[in-house]
Length: 258
Image 1 (cartoon, one colour):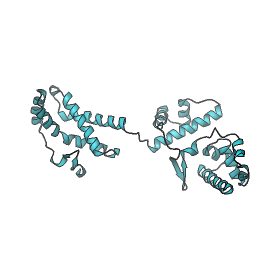
Image 2 (image 1 turned 90 degrees about the vertical axis):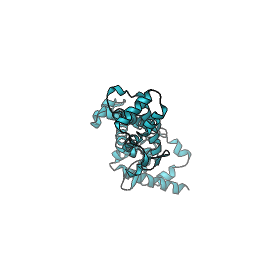
Image 3 (image 1 turned 90 degrees about the horizontal axis):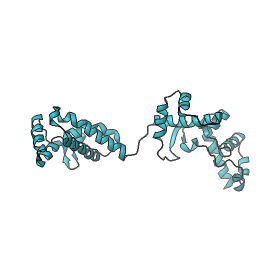
Image 4 (image 1 turned 60 degrees about the horizontal axis):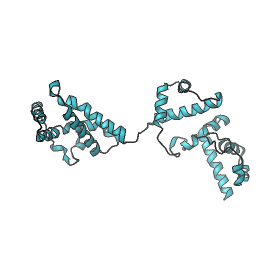
């Protein structure tokens, strides 16, 4: 690929040398005897192999120089551990070593990028768990959640584990009819079930000015601690509609109080 025929880590990739298999064998014999010049020549003669491998990771979002350097580390490890008596080509031995080094780097040094489908699975599992706890008054097992969703238990475990990293409450979950729904809209508010906090900040009058449906949504969301999905199920409208009505009600209350 043309994009790789540039200077990477100070190396002009267009001018990298090519070694024949015979040259590699002769150089490796010298390397085994401690010839450092032969080792350097052997490394330079295999940098094209590193370049061909890092192209496989072009969609990882990582800096190409970083991947090249990590690939070179894998190459040097392969040189140090290669056994010429195995009667295999060096490239056959080196490729998995280089790939493994790059994968370890991506795994250990970078935040995990969770796919949308995995996140959706995790959110479904969390919601299903919450609903099953309300119905059965006990925490369901992963297997029970998986049966309810008609999915494999391993997929549920993987998805839940994948979203363990801290995320913003304002991270969008999905959008419907132009209304974006956020993670915070999926979280029950267990702390604000008491009526007293509303009375203390004089919100009662503002709430009473709302339409019956808006009043009910605000009560369910902020007094009963229900999620938007739970509200939607109870009053038989979509979650997007609940989101719109909730925002409209809060805006109306804010305008009344200011």
